[in-house]
Length: 486
Ligand SMILES: Cc1cc2nc3c(=O)[nH]c(=O)nc-3n(C[C@H](O)[C@H](O)[C@H](O)COP(=O)(O)OP(=O)(O)OC[C@H]3O[C@@H](n4cnc5c(N)ncnc54)[C@H](O)[C@@H]3O)c2cc1C
Image (cartoon, rainbow, N blue to C red; front, side, top):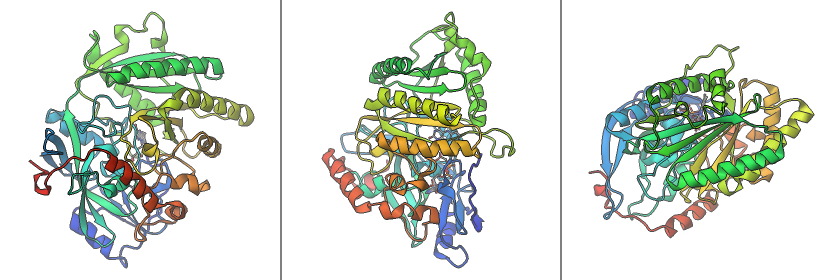
């Protein structure tokens, strides 16, 4: 699925933490820069590595079990899964399910690794509640309780969401938007909760996205629906086909609220179709478009129950060069701007199409809850939630898509959007914009030429202070160091 060249002169797949320590310490044999890599599914150039050492976590795939952590004296214990960074999100979710648990974050793609998602931006229209009150919900980094990392001196350090005094640890928050530029995560505890049954309602309809009034009305209605659904801890995912003028909404509700007799078949079929569409970056299949028929709307054929969040799919890693495959870019905005930005960005796309005879294939939108304590990037936006605007292509090498992305970046920056280093493309053309995604100054052992473009504009101290003042404003939880694990 890789969409960008990596160009490392050394590629290594260590199978233990001590091997990683040896690699970091031995610069002669393993030249700088070193870059940690999961499955390299990130669509941006974040994994590019001109002549350095790429350290893959493909052999670090142990899951050590479920552990209970105690966030504070008055709070109940939380279950965490103790694992290594090369575990895929699918493997993690299946393991959680076998233990009666689930990870609230559920990406469409299950091949991404825990290590490749805990220090980078991910997004999912998650449902339910975070086991730890006040935390963000809808990205993998928000699921991290603690992490062991190998830093540039080759030593192993452990960081936890809380420091020894029971306050939010600022360095831990900085790590969540650090993209592995100071260390490699080698073992982590991922927060889980009891399985949460859900109902998904598919709503597909024709959508004249080139008409501004139609857009305004539609996005107002979606926003109002989302307000209602999210007040009951549900969520909405939407995708718009710019080719076939259709919009697909997934209303995700907590619990088995509606009669859904065909759940088993529908859930399986829908997940399978979605995998094919996503992997190829294609359009909705004909069978799905049938559901836009008025007779089928809100019928038992448009809804299904599931016992738990989906584990996501394992995608084929090698797709022949000439086969279409998904790539995308994205930027996040505060949820209050939903109607304005969605309508405005489709207006921008319409004008772009009129001038350059090109438009992306689809737009996907995810809504994520914020904690208010993140230091950089999309999740540092000041709001209760953010939504992503993700234009997609089925050809990552298409120069016309890249030209669109460059114009897109200029426009979204003006609208107050926030990018990420792993999911927003072409940031190298505006390093000050890209630098807003990075919470921490890279270490020289880990800093690639690509990263060097952004680092002059990263003010680590300022970010640390900002996150520290907000973090301290939240009532701290306390625990004695040795009472972290039951
Ligand atoms: C078809 C497709 C569908 C997708 N769907 C979704 C989706 O639904 N939701 C979503 O959020 N994303 C989605 N993505 C994007 C993808 O999930 C993310 O970009 C994810 O971060 C990639 O995981 P990875 O393991 O490949 O990480 P990589 O791309 O290898 O790495 C990501 C970043 O993490 C760093 N890193 C990797 N391992 C470590 C480590 N052990 N320690 C420290 N840093 C490390 C890397 O250096 C890099 O900065 C999709 C991508 C594709 C191709």
